[in-house]
Image 1: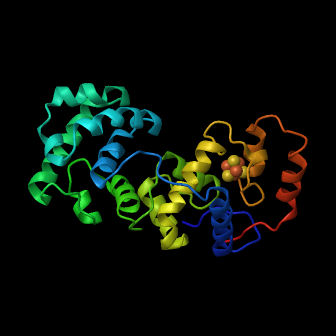
Image 2 (image 1 turned 90 degrees about the vertical axis):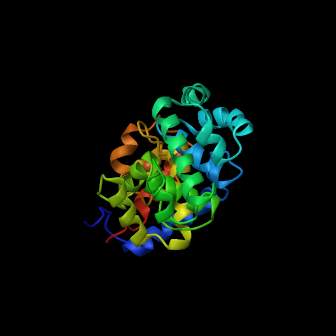
Amino acid sequence: MKPKLKKGLRLKEYVSQIIARLRKLYPGAHCELNFKNPLELLVATVLSAQCTDKRVNLVTADLFKRLKNAADYASIPQEELETAIKSTGFFRNKAKSIRSMANDLVHNFGGKVPGSMDELTSLAGVGRKTANVVLGNAFGINEGIVVDTHVRRLAQRLGLTRQIDPDKIELELMKIVPQDDWTNFSHWLIWHGRRCCYAQKPDCVHCDLASLCPSFEELSKLSRPMKSAITPRVMRRSVGRGAPKV
Ligand code: SF4
């Protein structure tokens, strides 16, 4: 399915302009989960489901001091782990997943987190999204693109996909984003989603992507009240440039 874009620039040029602006806007974008090794990132990523990174970081600050390796996670009693991670929500399922995953690590990988998609997704409770987070951020491997709620929303608003399913969105993004930027592209969209392109009231009038974004016209109506010093510049930029086309 072709993505929805405004008329004007070609898709490749459009994506390259989006990337250039995001790269400039968020030069230090990174995974906001705290971790010191692949195992910690794996655990933190499981805990981050339906939970903020800030909350996960509070919980893991203590957890990572207590549990140091896969054997520790595999042997901790279910109830004890549930109590330690309770504030992240869905704690029973998360505790079960972490213990099963750790058990697989101990028995199938000598306690080490493997560095390939096939091996990671063979672990209990580890899907493609979690594997992408670990590969991209703990191993520096651009194997895929993490599609979380922010990436999904922004990819749709920016007209990069019309898909709803995260796996299909990832496949479409992988076709148009250079592989070297796959991990960063997720970070950039997540950072922009958290700082500007909010789910409910995107701050379109102050957005650095406004002049490119095909959703500006519609979603800017939801934006906060315009500041006179900034709005005219953004508005001029928005109408003054050629719009992208497929
Ligand atoms: S213009 Fe609005 S919808 Fe488009 S990326 Fe910016 S904040 Fe999001």
